[in-house]
Image (cartoon, rainbow, N blue to C red; front, side):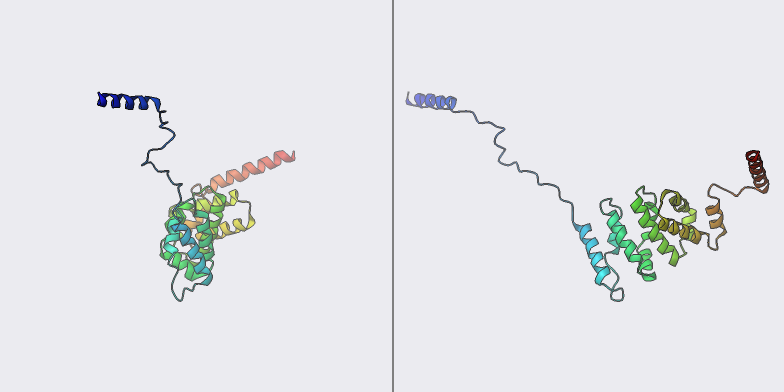
Length: 214
């Protein structure tokens, strides 16, 4: 009887006590997810490269961050800061251009020429100007991959006179002592017109001028 009475009192207390809101108290083993923080590795490498260009010396050792900076070009977040640093780096002279080419900068710059961003294209045009001013070995590769079309289109897409001069210099270097370069740059749409086609076009233009005068 005593045990039955005790059990009855326990059931009564359970019914009388308010029910706990399960949603108000999280599970004891549930933790709040921390906010996402990007890895600072690339940002630190760019900062180290910036410090090296200010205080370092190639006579002591080349910049160890240079290969990592090339990998940073694949990230849209750090692409423009990386290109700014590389443009400043190749502006140091032939030794800087040779180091950049030595670590494999060529394929990265070829791929980025297709970028629609104006700031990225301007930085690339400047860098290619420095490269071709000091190294003509990549002339045939640029012509074979039809990269000259990007430089030619830059003349129409950019209104900056300085950028136009850079693009014209690059095209002139591609034409320098290269019949293939001259043909592809001057006639980007194919072979030059024949003599008969040129004469017909000149005659048509002359007739149009005569009609306008009348």
